[in-house]
Image 1 (cartoon, rainbow, N blue to C red):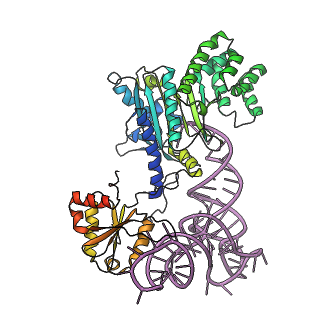
Image 2: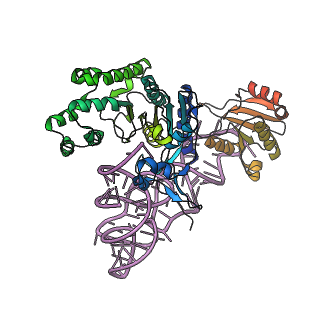
Image 3: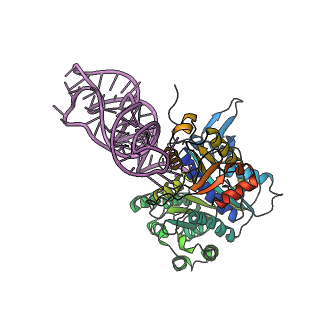
Length: 452
RNA sequence: GUGGCUGUAGCUCAAUUGGUUAGAGCACCAGACUGUGGCUCUGGGGGUUGCGGGUUCAAUUCCCGUCAGUCACCCCA
C-alpha cells in the first residue's frame, strides 16, 4: 500500500508552495542580516531530556518523540531555545557580546493540527545574548516589525502588542496580589480578551482576590499609554523604576521608527514561564489569526538550561500564520518558481541538433534554457505550438532557431493586440565563444544570467 | 484528549422523497485555424462518491464505525 497523503499536520511543498516559503525565508534573512544577525543551526533531533529537564514530563505528550535504534529517548525539536542555549553556553566565554544570532529551524510538535498550527513548521528565531539594556529589547522588536514591512505589511495590517513582566509584577504587587497568586492572574490576563469578564472574575475570585483587586486586574488591559500608566500607578513608589524602564523601551522604539506599530497591552504575558522582562506579540490587525510572532526577555533561562548567567532575549516567528496572512492579502501570489530565461524554438529549416547546441551554449553561459523535450516534435511541431509551451512555462526570452546558422532572439512578453516585433538576429556559432556570445545577447537586449 | 460541522475529477461545485452508464466549469493532454503566440473551436484522459460495514430490489443520498479536514475547548510556537 502506497500512502497517497503526507502525514497529518505535515506539508508537501509543490514548486509554487516552495516559492512562497522561499520568499518568506528571503525576507527573514534579508532583515536579520540588515541588523547584522548571523545564522546558525543545530540538530533537528535531540535527546528527550533536553526538553523534559526543565519543563517536566508533562510536555512529552506534546513532543514528537520516540526511541531510536540505540535505545535512546529522542525527540524532534519542538523549539530552538534549548539548543540555542546549549550552543551559546558551550562558548559563552569566547563569544563577543552581545551575541546576535538567528536561525530558521523546522520544528515539530505532536498535537492535533488546526489552521495556522501544524505538526511541523519553520520558525525564525532571533536572539540577543549578553545585553541587559532595554535598547536590545527595542532593537529585537524592530527586527520583527521590519520583517512585516519587508513582506509588504503595514501598521494597518499588523499590530505589535508590548508589555513587560517586571512592570506587571510590580503593578500586581501594588494592587496587593501575593506572589502565590500571580500565576493564576497571568492565566486570566492571557485570555482576558477571549473570554467573558464574568468568567475572568470567577477565576480571579477562586484565586483568592477580593472584589477591589479583581476590578483593578480587569482594568489593566485598558492601560494603553504611558499617561494611563502614570495616572494609575505613577504615584506608587515601588512602581516608579519599572515604569521608567518601560518608558525608555518605548522611547527607543519611537526613535527606531516603530511607534506606529506599537500598542501597549498588559494582557500580553506569553504562556511560557521563562520570560522575565519585556514581552511582545505581533497580531494581524483584525485579530482573526493566531499570533504571527512572539518573544521577549528571558534573563534567567540560559542559567537554567546552560549554566551560564547571561541576560538574553529573543522571538520566534512561524511561517504558517504569516503565510496564511500573506496569502489572504494576495502578497505572495505572483511568485513563479524558476521560470526559464530562454525557450529555444525549432523551425522547419533547422535540425534538432542545432536547437540542442544552442540550448547547451546558453546553459554554459549561465542561462536557464528549455526546449520541447521530444525529438519528433522538435522536427515537426509548429513554432506557434512551441511558443505556447514557452508561455506556459513563463519563459522570458525566445530563441527561434531559423536554420542551422542563425537564430532570432526576442522577448516573449508582448503587449496584447500588437503584432510581435522582429527580434535581433544572432549567429549561433557566436554563442560558443563566451565573450562574443554575451556581446551578441547584450545587443539583443538580454540581461546577464540570473544569479541564484 | 473532548464536542460540533464537512468529505463527489488536480481545483470550485452539481446530481428530484433513495432510482438508468455520477455531470459542468477551470486545469491538463492532443488536434484545427496548413509552421512566430495569449482568442476561438474540436476531441481526449481522468472518480472504488475518503475508507469499511449495515439497511434496501436499488445508496453519492439513510445508519454505524473509521480516517482525514475544519471550528470551539485544552494546550501552546
